Length: 532
Figure 1 (cartoon, one colour):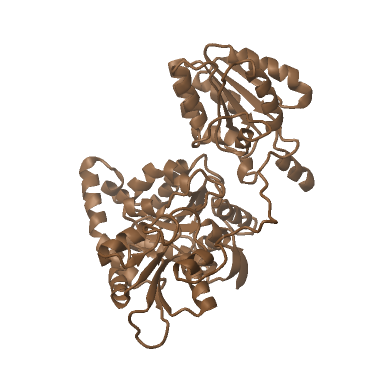
Figure 2: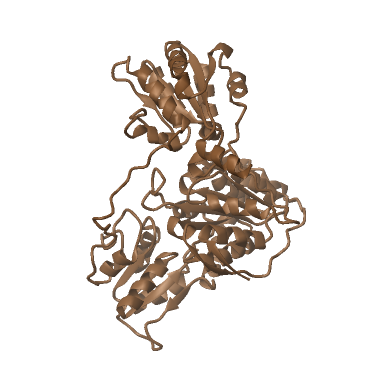
């Protein structure tokens, strides 16, 4: 059966056809569509895959590891910065190993289209010493996902599947294979494997080290690595390109368009296939390393070659930042083209903006009026669509660092003597990473005001369920915030004066206060009305 799929959807279909019993994820562009595809598939009769959203990436990975412990296959999905949140179980899962197959899909965002940074998740894979797979196209995304579960159960390790934005969010036809059934319930009986007391962990770590040669051998024989020859004859001294994942597509596009005498070694697995790489390197005097993201493999290959024949991101042949493109690779291969990635002058940039009618707008209008009474005020912000309040016409927030940092940064500023110490955090972000910071503030009796802008959904990524909807008052009270300083307001123009009054009162309170600005996202409300 052939289907037209996004790269993210191809991964989801591959996981379903590989017999997963659960997917665990927190929404984050460009990975969200994987879980959404699986959720839509649950409408089909007979589908029994657990697919609700997790509170954050750490809880997602830990739950998936639990499913693996039970002997079943599980999928975890997150964007690259989400892996920072999941780093603790990620690193330790490489030490425990797995029982049922466990695949961790991490969607990287080169050029930071919707992210705070463009970190390369392959660094984590190398750090944890687990297999990493990097598909070049949608068909490989489907096939590699299925292979990842087989590899995970064969190596007894979690496997990372790394995809960039361009692959995740572009479409192509995908040929499906025969679906596989789910694993039976079969909990692990290896007690020492799962209890990471030092005595057990030392042995587990040694076994992880011992597996590295086996992983290299699997890369050597992988069907996802090959050489694309310039001719049918063995050719020496022509330029060679070692291309990783999606960079292979860009390289082949340039080579075919300009009829370049260039051979390409495509690699889509880590650890690197050393023998295959060395044979290719020995044949070429000049080599270009093309990889999307950091020069992760280029740094490793420098050690193989030991001279300056390797070109890529390290020597400036390719830029260190941003996405690769056919134009950049053409220039690196000596082809004169128009300015790579040039945007036509007729295309004007349009800054993002909050939706018309959005409750965040009315909140920021009220907040700005109150804060204007304080000289040199600062408002700490967080990650979500309300972050757009940092832009004109609001200019209402002054920081945005990572999920949950609004509360803890405001606490630190309050501890330093800043008054008032105010932060704005979204409902989904609060349950993701804000609760613990609020608990710190309660325990320290830090004088700060936390504004939870609750639009009852995870709006930034398309309106997924928010873990704490309807429970924020109880959560804050349970943490220890005084009942009379947990205030609720409805951000509407007709409530402006009352909202200003509430904000002003709580900003003057020398303790922890929480204001819940509660109003449904206009987009989810519109979809509900349409569905009704």
